[in-house]
Length: 326
Ligand code: XMP
Image 1 (cartoon, rainbow, N blue to C red):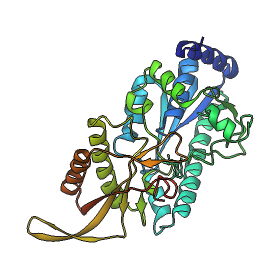
Image 2: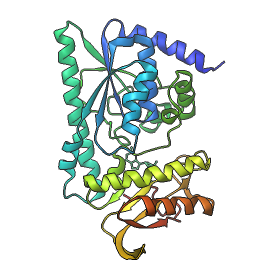
Image 3: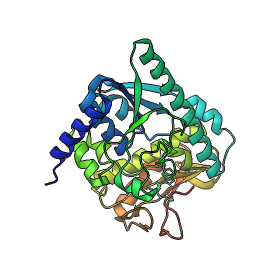
Image 4: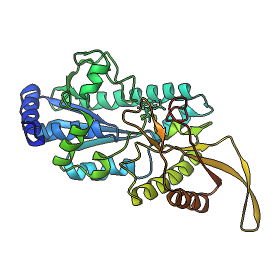
């Protein structure tokens, strides 16, 4: 019979056998899959694993800290954090086109990750250790979707920023290959990972970079991060995390509208709330959320986030609208 305990035991055994005395690298994205894959491999081979986290500055409030502190505390994993915020901002300067943003973010991500990878391999070599394996959080549906591939390194590249270069000499470790998402969450829970990571809703690899309609700047990211944190806090407090598949919070950076606050006229930006219900993100409907929760989110965002004077609700299903605005 299938139990998370069995799956963990089996995989730990298989990983030990596969990796032997060599070393492995795992990229963490902040998402569920890479976190659970890393935790499993850590359980199997401990300090033979090094994780890499590229901080591109496009994460939501508290998410980078979750990886750096909570994930490390829960697993004891060796983590290399690369602060690449300036680099991503520079590369994104002046760019408004959504696909162009995705390309830039994907490209920079791979460059930074490869650099970190090369450093780890070189450090290993200096100590006489062979860094021969790369851990990926590939799930069963990923394999089916991409035509039953046999462990090519870029299997997830059509979805994730973490799509990896093809010219790697690494062998892949994919301990989640037989699992579905809900099973991965159960395994993660059993491994003692924090709920904030295990129960995390879908979040795009390019992060907040594709939730600013217009150019991405530090100021705009900070503003959106605040608005998004407020929305998430209120949705969680209202117990809506399960009912809502995900709720993009979008900044219309190039739009301004007139408002009034205190005894002054304002000319600020709108924030869009996009709560959707879905089974698989292929189709979606806008979530009929309680008005009082919407009211709380709106009041708090306009009170607490400078330069935002209007909150609007997206009531479009998918199709015709996509879940994200970009
Ligand atoms: P759309 O907007 O196409 O989104 O309805 C469907 C699902 O995919 C996520 N999404 C992305 N995920 N990189 C990702 O890793 C991306 O570029 C990307 N674009 C959209 C979106 O959040 C939703 O869950």
